[in-house]
Length: 342
Image 1 (cartoon, one colour):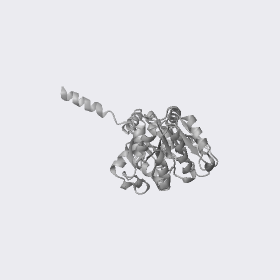
Image 2: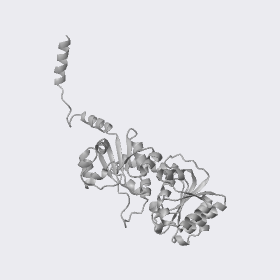
Image 3: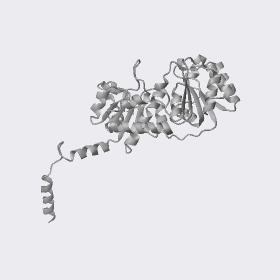
Image 4: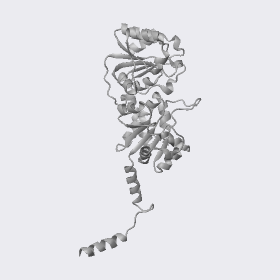
C-alpha cells in the first residue's frame, strides 16, 4: 500500500511543472525574492551638511520598508554618526573597496558584492544613469531598483527651492518613497529626527565653516562670547580641524579666556556636543545642519556667499540671520537676536 501511494504521488508530481514567467504564481515568487533581498543601500560621499540633508530619505525608507536593513555606504565618522543619530546601519565605502565599481567590479570584495546582491533598492548620490558605476551595480544585481539622486544643483542652476525639495523631486520615479519622504519632512520640521537630546545649560558656539568667505569675523564671535558670558550664559566654543588650522593662537586664547574650548574628535562627539547644548550659534556650516535636524535651537549667520533659501538647516528650531555684509553685522544685533530666541 505504501509503495502504491508513493508511486501515485510521483505520478501526480510529474503532472505539474515549475511556474514560468507567464504563470499566475510567478509574481508571488518575485515578491518572495524581494523579501529575501532585505538591504536598502544609500551610497553617499558628500560633506557633513550634504550628508545630514540626506537623512530624511533614510528615515523615509525605514518607514517604507520596516523589515529591511537601511544601510549607508559612506566614509569616515559619518558612518557611526548615522548609526547613532538615526539607528541605521553603515558600511565603510573605503574598507569595502567600493571604488572598484568605477573600474573593475570583478575586484570588488565578496562581502561588498553580497551587500549589493542582497539589496532590493539602491539609492545613490555618487553616480548617474548610464555611467560605469550604475552598469557595474546592475550587473551584480539586475533586479535591484536603482534611484539616482544628484546631491545638489549644478553651479548656476536656476533651481530656487530648498535642497530638500531638490532631493524630493528626484524621487518621482518611486512614488511610494516620495510620499514617505514628504511625510518625514513634515515630521522633521516639527520634531526633528527623534534623537534624544540632553540640554545641560550651555550655549555652543561654532565660529568656522568650510569656507572663510561664509564666516562672520572671528573677532565678532569673541565679543559675542564675552557678552553671553557676562549675561550669565555658560558657553562652549566648538573647534574643528578647519578652525584649528585657520584660527591664530591669539584668537583661540581669547575664546579660552572666557569659555570652554572643546575639540570634538569626530562627528559622534560633535553630535553629543550639539545634543547637550541649549542652543548653537554658527555660520553656514555642517554643525549647524546637524544641530538643526536633531532639534537643538540653531542660530545660523548667513552672508552673501550663502543661500539661505536653499541651505537653511532643517529642523523645528532653526533661525537664520542674513546679512549683505558680514563685516558690518554688529555683535549687538546678533546678541539681541540670539537672546530673544533662547
